[in-house]
Length: 455
Image (cartoon, rainbow, N blue to C red):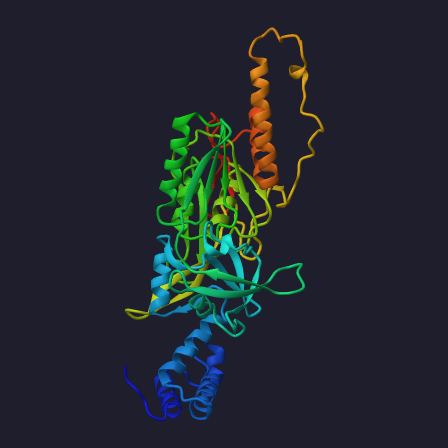
């Protein structure tokens, strides 16, 4: 790297020389948006010179120029950022699911760090941090004035080290301080289990490189144990991740048609992703759970399945991050993360700053079932008559066990409870005609966002 003495003066001279052939003055710059405005460049060099010479501490030219780059990117949007060597490494490890820290997906809002969602089984989720919390202090240092990269760096640290996090929560008058112990975060992308005998629950915590395959393997395993009658796909508090992983998840359920497309200004920013033949569930009904912590890739999945009428979306409105960030290396150790495109659902909806609205709105709430005073039934009376069909008394006990499980689910997770009830309704009354598992040709949604009845 070449260094200049009296940097501001020579920087201004250098800029003027470089632009002399292209920028012929402020008037020409106004006529041609491709030219840089010299008056604004002169203002920049004057400010640079004042900081360089008069700031209370001595700052090197390298530091000042790096600050200028960070400032440019930070002012664009909450997701564009300058990545130094450490940040670049962190970004790469995030896509594999292994990184150190607290386990929080964050963004910036009004100069403070806003929690998009805590990740499952991490120090943040165990401490009760919630989506929407505003982090105002890290240790004794206010986050006001920090860039997002700086705040994330402050939250990172060795496993076992502690950090005090002060946050504000909507509806509370005073800030709350939480002490967190940093841990080595290994996010398990996909978890699956049965809900009763007939239904599957699949939780995607974050979209990683192998998420699509992991989800397919999990569903196939549940199907081999016993055929499923429906699936709950839980994307709540899923901050997103790898775009291709979200495409693979949708492709597993949709026979054909558009999944998502992007539009931007640079070359290769306009892309579309479509499904391939095959539905691993053979048209099983699906309920997708979302909330305000469901962002980015989660919204791609929810929006695509909603547009294809392949799933019912239940919960609350999602976060609304509909932008694509491209990592552009600028040296061997540094890069910029730049917002280069917006993505759209198959029907042409932009998710940016709007989110996905659920088909059925269900708030997360603490509910308690009203239990009857007595659990006695006819079968408990001495000398009761037998049913005559055989086995009814034992099935009554099974129903009692099932009712207990249902009450526990209602009290612990009312949204999941409602999703399961919805799937049971599908089974009882038959689900509406879908694009999968029927003799009818599926609706094809083209890249321009228009639906067609012709495949």
